[in-house]
Image (cartoon, rainbow over all chains, first blue to last red; front, side, top):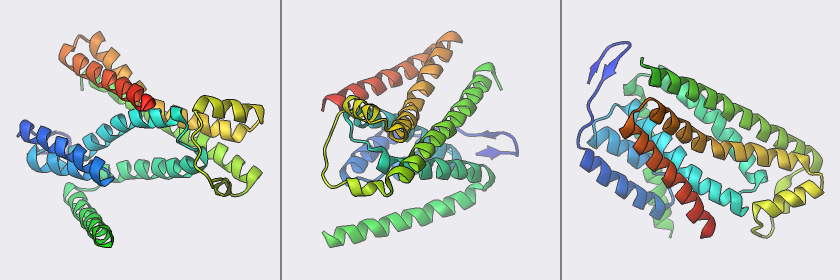
Length: 133
Length: 121
C-alpha cells in the first residue's frame, strides 16, 4: 500500500476468496451466535488485502445494514423491549462514536494490536464456553 | 473529492447527527421511565410476545409517554440504515452511476426482503 498523510491508495485482491470467506463468516456467526465482524475483518484484511481501517469501517457498515433488516423485523414483532434495549443502544451509540474518533487518530499498527488482543480474548472465551458445555 | 463523495459525506454527517437525536429520545424515555416506575427489569418475569402495534396502543391508552418516546427513538435508530441505502440509491441513479445504483438497489431490495421474511417467520 502506497501511503502519505492525505491519500492512501490500495488495490482489492482475491475477491473470490473474500466472497467465500464472507459466506463462512455468515455461517459461523449464525452458528456460534457471535458477531461476524471479527471474521469479516480477517477476510478483508488478510485475504482481500484491504487496509485495516477500511476493513473495520466496511465491516461496521455491512453489519449495520444487514442487522437493520432483522432488527426491524424483531421490532415490529414486539421482541425488542425498550426497557432492555434502551441502555444497550445508548452504550453502543456512545461507544461507537468514541471508537470511530479513536480509529481516525490511531495508527494502523496500534489498531492491529488492539484487534489481536480482542481476537485473543474472544478465542479464550469461546474455548472456555466450549469446555463448559 | 467528486460530487458523489461530498454528498455522501454530508449524508453521513446528517445520519450521524440523527443517531444522536435517536439516542437523546431513547435516553429521555429511559430516564423518565426509571423515574416513574423505578427498576423496569422487575416487570420481566414471563416472556410474552406482543406485536408492536398492540404494544403502542396499550402504552398510548395508559398515557405511558416515556415508553412511547423510547419506542420512537428505537424506531428511528432502526430506520437509519434503510434511509442511508435509499438515499445512496437515489443519488447514484441521479448521477447516472448505473453499476453502483444497481448494487445499492439490490442491497435495498435485500433489506426489505429480509425485513418481510423476518416478520413472517
